[in-house]
Image (tube, rainbow, N blue to C red; front, top):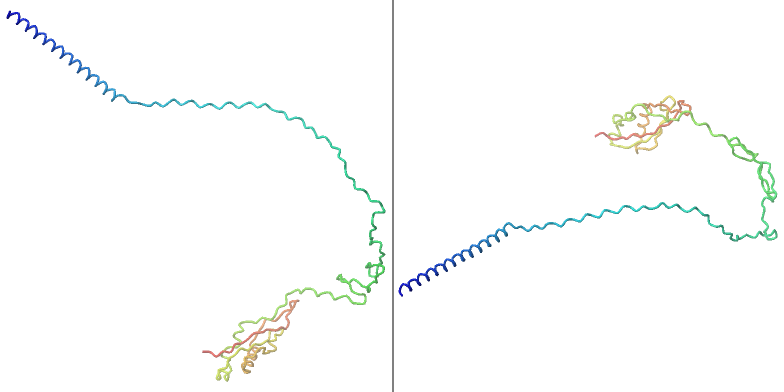
Length: 251
């Protein structure tokens, strides 16, 4: 009896061990399978990259070939029809309706002795004649004298030789006028002969002092030398020359 109980106890232990081994194997298989699935999922997450591939572009439509336009021949020119429209005619006035016109040419004229034509009722003017220069004057009058021919040379006035300022200087100051400190400007005009010498002196503007005026003409007459004047033929002739002398006491 005791042996049978021991035999049953051993069988129960063996059965428990087998059940435990089966659970261990199943647990290992379960753990290993779950780990593998997790590893596969991680690999897929790491290695998998979503790439959006662009959609292929559709080829552009090629333009259609140009349509062939048939050549058109223009229609022949047809002139427009002529319209026979009634034309307005201006009535021609009868001779009785035309007013009489004044014809000046019907007035009789007459020719005067000088060749002019006047009305027959008008009186002719005094007899005239045409002069060589084209002017018309009465027959009783003489023709005007022709103008003189232009000169061959341009006439020139006498010109002084040298420096006219040296003809009268402060060294020539009259002693009395110098003592009385009298000053002024004497204006004069001289006549110059064809030989270039002064023939006359005239005071045209007084300095206010007769002695200064007289001294001016005396010095200019004695010292003045000129290139004589010339006429239209280029010949030396007499002429006049004007100037002034300022009498001023030296400082």
